[in-house]
Length: 112
Image 1 (tube, rainbow, N blue to C red):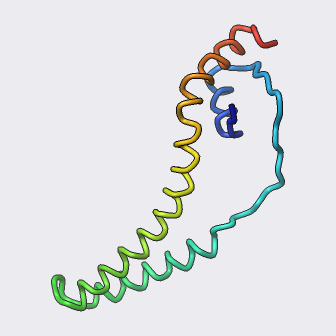
Image 2 (cartoon, rainbow, N blue to C red):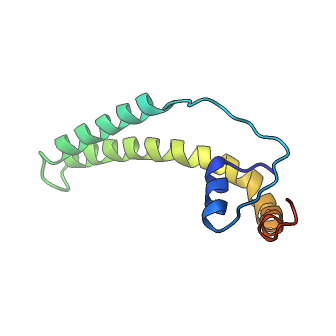
C-alpha cells in the first residue's frame, strides 16, 4: 500500500504514533511544476473577466469574454482534477481496506 506524507501526517494527528514502513521514497522539494501553467491561465481569466465587464451583460461581446474566462477556469481546474483522479482511482479501494487495518494495528502497538 502506498501512502503520502500528507496521509501519514493525518494519521499522526488522529493519534497513530507507531506506523510500520517497509519502504519509503523520499524526494527533494520538486518546487511548483505547474506554476507557469496556472499563472498563465489565471492571467488569461482575469483579463477575460475585465473585458467582459466592459460590455452589457447578455451582449455578444459579454458572452464571448464570459466563455473565454470559463475556458481558462476549466483549464486550471482540469489540471488539478486529472492529477487527483488518476491517483484516487488506483488507491482508494486499497486505502479503505488496508489502511484502516494497518493504522489500527499501529495504534494498538501490534506493529511495534
